[in-house]
Every structure is written in structure tokens, then in C-alpha cells.
Length: 207
Ligand code: 5GP
Image (cartoon, rainbow, N blue to C red; front, side, top):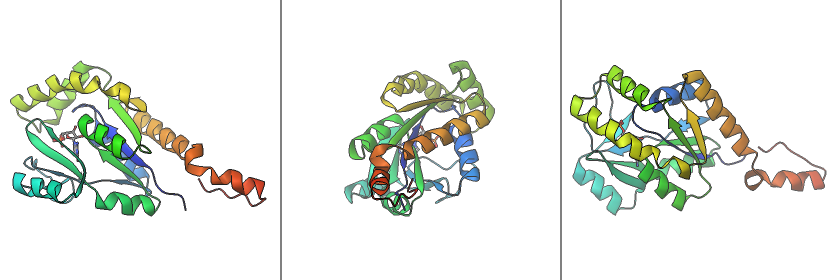
């Protein structure tokens, strides 16, 4: 069995990352979402261990000290980070693992795991992004302002990602992500052993 992909998935707040990933995960049993740790307060309906592991600042800093985070970053006044343990386990089991993280964390993962696949998702326009943020109704005005202001800066990091997906419709965005994952699995670096099989007359579909 070939190893699963490690996928960095970033985009500005309001790009629709959550909706797109929700749809993708509902369709695909072999794709898993990493649950991050954060020091931000839970939003209504969010559960500890499901959307995030909600930690105090002290707890979060202790995990960094202990080397338990693959990456971490401060975003709009709160810490966010990826627990390292599950990633190895899940990819070894053949599942693709998605890290829904912001751009500073994305850069750290790229450095540590150059084999990762990075996807940047954008809304069709900044106007649409603000509309989506307000429509979500989960943030106060001050937070919306901060997130809208952060978007231009975040989008300026898009060129360092492998792929860009425009979230015009959820179906289209999910379709494009599925195509990216499928193509990435056919990279020579991931399944060069196929050639070995062909030459030795026991070709197997390993990818
Ligand atoms: P939110 O507060 O809206 O859930 O997330 C705010 C930002 O933090 C989003 O851009 C999200 O992608 C990012 N984020 C969530 N988890 C992580 C993480 O583990 N590491 C990093 N670097 N960013 C994260």
C-alpha cells in the first residue's frame, strides 16, 4: 500500500475552506482532516477534539516545548498548531491527511515535509469573501474587520503554493481538489516502483 498524501490547504478566512473540506470529507473515506490545537475560544457549536483541541496559552506553549507540534503560528491574536502524531499514523495507513492551516504554518510544513502537496483556495473576489464572512454570522464586527484586512496579505502568499483553486461553487472546488489528489498520486517520486514492476513483468497498480 502506498503512503497517503500530506496536503496543506490554506486560504483567507471567508474563502469557504470549511464548506469545501466538509463536502470532500463526506465524499471520501480515504481523506482525513487533521484536528488542530488553538487558544481561541470555541464558537457556538464547536466541540473540543472535533473542530479543534481548545487549549490555554500555557498548555499550547507546553506542547511546543515538548516538540508535539508539526507547525504552529499566531493568527489574529491566537495560537494555532498541528499535532504531529496523527499525521504519521494516518499517512502510513494510506489515508490522505489535510491540514487546514494558515500561510505561516503552511511554509513551516513545506520546509519540514517537502513531499507535501499545497493547495491555496481563494474566493472569486474580496467582495464575495466579506459577504461570506458576514453571512456566516460567527464573528463580531472587529474580528471581521481584522480578517478582511488579513486577506490581501494572505493571498500574497498564494504563489508559494503548488495549486490554486477558486471557490466559485463548492462542487467545482471539490472536483478540482479530487483531480489534484489523483494527479499527485501518479507522480514518479511517489510510485516509481511501478516501472520496476513493468520491467520485471509483474506490474501492479500501486498508486
Ligand atoms: P478559525 O479561527 O477561523 O478557525 O481559523 C483561523 C485561521 O487559522 C484559518 O486560516 C485556519 O486555516 C488557521 N488554522 C487552523 N488550524 C491551524 C493550525 O493548526 N496551524 C496553523 N498554522 N493555522 C491554523
